[in-house]
Length: 313
Ligand SMILES: NC(=O)c1ccc[n+]([C@@H]2O[C@H](COP(=O)([O-])OP(=O)(O)OC[C@H]3O[C@@H](n4cnc5c(N)ncnc54)[C@H](OP(=O)(O)O)[C@@H]3O)[C@@H](O)[C@H]2O)c1
Image (cartoon, rainbow, N blue to C red; front, side, top):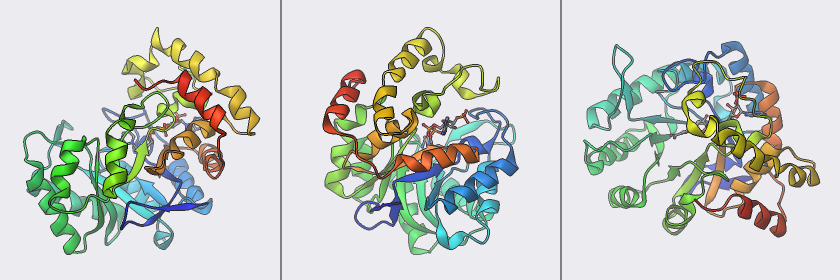
């Protein structure tokens, strides 16, 4: 699998990284129950297939995703970069808050290292902005954690350009993790150009719009507590409209001998600012299919057709 450097100073990442959100199992923003044994097999298979990095977060399953990733990479640590996130903390009643206070970041990094059973986190990212803490105070802690050897590269997720600029003044932002897929193209205007200009790598999330862009989405399959059932994009009347649009991608995918999901991921990867796409999976067959989404080119006229079908919103 081809690799690309994350920003100017980062590691060489494969075109896709494995997203471990769904592996976290059931919680407020979960995907329903998960099968831990299958999750571990999925992670190990993805490494075997050549995927060289995994994205998780402390909050996914309130620690559970990190624990599963930690178990799965035992004996394989030298073959995989680990990215995780902080800033969504929970209390004893499982209530989640945005918290990028220096103390919370320090608490979270220690807890993540323990759950992942590793010495250093390769890419540590702020999950979401925290309006109550000046971002400079939070970013200073990240710079110190790097000096202390707890983390290697520094990233943020769901940040706008203004926040990226404020962090950059204190220490280089190695990566941004934004949502990016055919349905969500708004970052093309300001955010992706900013990242290209400033040497900030982009690891984009939800390349298949959390399942809608796979060409196989069936609304009867998600568990009752799957977060997607509460999102208007996955409910009628939007759902049928979205799926009809996705269906129009099928003939193009077939032309390349690819699935609709593979085509959707390949489209994300063609943007020069994008380093890698984080593709979520919780089963071995999914990761086997997804790993073949890389290293093929979509012809310009097909890209044009796709982008007219899914215009910038
Ligand atoms: N920073 C953030 O705020 C943020 C937000 C969202 C995501 N992320 C990261 O990005 C990762 C990926 O995003 P995502 O999980 O939302 O979306 P995604 O990669 O667009 O879609 C993943 C989902 O699509 C389905 N799927 C995967 N492979 C498939 C296949 N081969 N055939 C059919 N269906 C398939 C699975 O759903 P089923 O299992 O239900 O079939 C899977 O959970 C996450 O795991 C997480 O690491 C970060």
